[in-house]
Length: 500
Image (cartoon, rainbow, N blue to C red; front, side):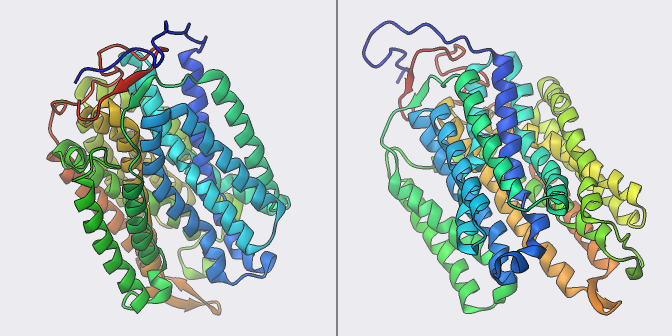
């Protein structure tokens, strides 16, 4: 059924607001960086949380775990809500939630309040796929790839910037300061979005699938709880096994329901297309490969020199090791867009996976020199920048424009799941391959090298999966940068019939 391009009340379309595309791209990218920083900002603080709050180390670990859970749950859900009710509206609401979470963490030292605040901060991860969807709807086709590349790369840029910034705050200021700063920046983000970012004119017609949203959330919570807590609970414990079995059962029931409902939370028929399914599998593997770089670099250089490989670096220095990678991600996002424009995003993703694998090979053989460690980490980050830029372009080639928000949300979710599996894998390797040195237990050099090999293997597996991606746009999918009727999005409301 053709798109309905009339405004709801039948009146003339309003005069477009004086938004400038360049401002919109910059503002949305800034929002993405801020949200990504929120995911890692407490990592340097974790060892100190028990002394600062009186909480147990297990409770303190939930400051990271809960953001992963809420980010995974809310990213695809809010992407779908944005498709139906307005992407900018939902994006602003996500930033409001981030500000509330930041304020809660800033005003309290109670572990329960801190975990609640961090949960709210994690929910704001939906800003990234929503921003990608707005850019697709609003920009002329020739600018979409470069803008989406930058927006997608903000996830890696924020992760690289967040660690050294948080380390500086922890060493020189009261730890609540970073939450006050994040709250203030969140308010600035909201004002900038309202002033510089237009509301997307596209709407998906239909009723929101609340049952599907709850089913997806339940399956994700069961899966991610088991993965993130399995090392502490025991991989064969009743809780871990029960959650994994529960995740499978709920996922099967949810899938059966989604195939029967008229306007599903996730269109599984579209998601099962090779162009979409294989892209999401590649996203999971790339998320795994990228996250190992962030997890082990800071810890490795902080290990004492008595280990034979550690450099005894400070918290700030260890965080700064990732900063060149963040800079490279900013610089390479337009390069990735040009590669995708000329050769296709499939080629970009293959190149990215190969670069990540090479980066880990470099890291395997250069674990004793700070500068070579930084070089290897930067190579991995460079490959990640190209991959994160190519993934949304591949997704948008395979789905209708009416499902851009939900599809990008699902792709971002797959990256998060990959990161969760990486975190569990790294923890298992580093806690099982240890030796005693200087009166303490430390991971062996082989443990770190094994992590590098596993991450390189994930990157090569992503390369293999990408080889099987279709070489051209899936039939029935929307053209990148255009609305369903072939025009760049304007001021009028465009409603999309489900299944059009």
